[in-house]
Image (cartoon, rainbow over all chains, first blue to last red; front, side):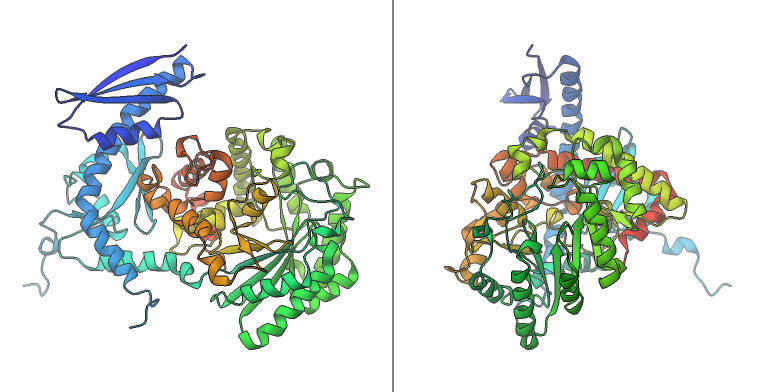
Length: 100
Length: 485
């Protein structure tokens, strides 16, 4: 039997990309329809064919944890992107592949 | 009055800054974090958020460790940036040297008829599946175009000993060309040893050719997995091994095993057989989805979870052996551990990013076709020519190496821009494997949540880290595996 759960996330607290990434990661167990209205993201989670109730509930729990993880990754990536580019620049400026 | 300032003077007053890192849940109470160069650290779950929000107290015992592993730095510090850049450059240095491994498929003929065979072998008598000298010459032209100072030529089949004349031709011709080239030239024959003769061994000895063979386990298992007329594959392997070691040297013959459904309950017996025959390690390999493995549905005979149980049981036994004083290595783990615990990349094609296809290894097929990897030609034998880069008789080195088939596969599968991989803490240890994902998902990237490659490797990475975290003795053993000479 197909199972469904709806989760709501505040747009001020979460990025759309974060929900999309968590949805991608969960695709082996469930699919996610994401919509936004009135400052909220609504995520409708539907079990894949053949996924039992217990496995679906675990996947929903996993999805919630992944949303929090991806939001934290987003914060970390935003803060460290300039220095990441600097380090890559340093690494590839001294390869010796291009003659002076 | 003391000449020295008090310790308080040196204490950092300003908050730390974050350096780029990635994280993933290791289990229900810990995260793994990895820096840009692939060094890892395990954090208790409640620590991660304060670390990223920069509210971790400067007095925390974690601060010196996180700083020494370049997860954080103090303002104005430049050394962590230089160190990370140096480690990244070291890790990727293999790329600049380009192709090392050149595989010559000298024949598709084989005396075995293994149901899991990945290369769609042909019967012994069909010599239309043999490489010609014209193709060998053109392939050697290609080999010496590679800028790599070390060149390895590996003969594969089928059973390459069925076309040993071509093996001899390529070796002699390559050595002649190498008088001018001066490369570090190595030869390997991948063989079951079943057709090995004394004359062949004399040639191998003269030209320092190494043998890479196959052993699936004890007699019954090996013979069931590797049928041949006479049902004597294991006996022939053992006789060949003894002769080859005597002629070439004890460490000049290696063996690989493949896990079939019949192997699954017998991991200890398989390891014991390797020990009995004097090997110092084993590569616990899963079946690949190519060739006869697909036709005979062998590939579907067990799932990733079952293979992981097999692998974990085997690894546990191997660790126990090492703790009892018997030095023995699980080779896939040692490749992963080298990536986890050192700044070098062992160059194992499956675990490379960008993918190793074409740029770490390349295949010259018996019919002149050039493939991006061994798996690519296996796919081609099944009728899928996606990774056929060209024909050695028709295209130049530049046309083949710069072909869209190769460059698109490398670019599209690059893990740092692949969904899920780009955020994955285990990405520095992993590989992109476009050929596998194309074979399974008809897509170079594949859908990682559904990928058994991703599932298997993530489980292995987590398992190895947990073993090291839980036991200092195991960590010491693993450090030895990672830093093998």
